[in-house]
Length: 356
Image (cartoon, rainbow, N blue to C red; front, side, top):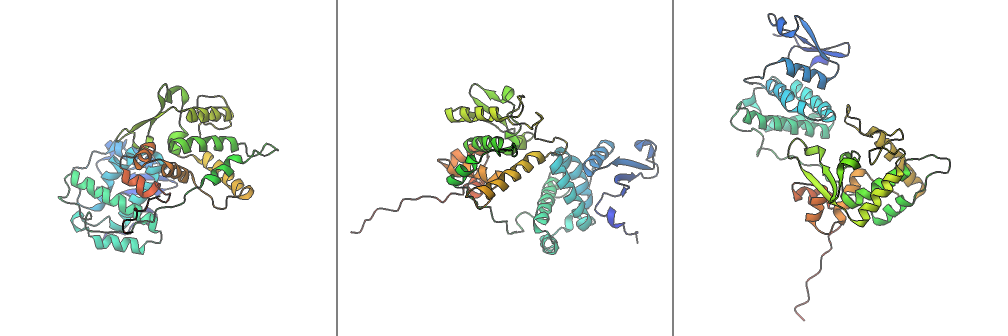
């Protein structure tokens, strides 16, 4: 019987090891020339870096029989094309799935195994996300010719998470916008957050796109041009938010609130972007939002916090129609808008009396 892998190496591709904080590949005998003559080749300090290095060195797999082999190609070709943060999350899921299903033949995958995997997982949300990735990898397996049909589609029914239903009331927004900057100079982010909220409530632009806006590039005569980063490499969806007097006015407020006069609509006190490209995060902005919300709860009549996502949902909920809400949020399918973002109770007119 083959020797069991060390616990810290389980879930990694074959011949990979984690050693002193870095990932290494044990090169098969006779292939050292393809790996700079080394028997143990350093791939990188992080999983995304290791997969990128491995992808550049390896030839594309021609066949896959096991789940592990499928996930290896999926990580190389699909996960590696995603953003840094999503890569980090997806590679964790790939590693976990390899540890559980890796030796299973593709033709032996059954829905019952997925149900058992979720049932035994202490973190159900993470488990469902891992299953979603596994399902997509099988979709790619059909595309790549490894199997004839997807073994899970149409065979499973997983209970979805209940959609968040927090609707931010108008009076709560008024309370937030009335919050004053502290006299001692603290909470300098208050006017910036307030300017951001005003534009968000008019347009519904996502945080990632709104915090990346560059006026000299994105502001045109006909409106604000937004290339949705989330679908930039897929559908290439673009939206133009037409200028209105209200939108122009709120943009001017945002420009005046900037701590530095730089070519960004929103910037840090040093004049840099809130977006950390290497980590694919907005940690500085998120921290500022949390401080702002703490003051809102402590100093106003608002008793329940809300998120940036809730503001986007309020924009969709306050739109005159479902189609306008879909267009504002730049969704391809209005069903997503209706199910997740339209949170205000629907007002209906009763029928007229007919039997008097």
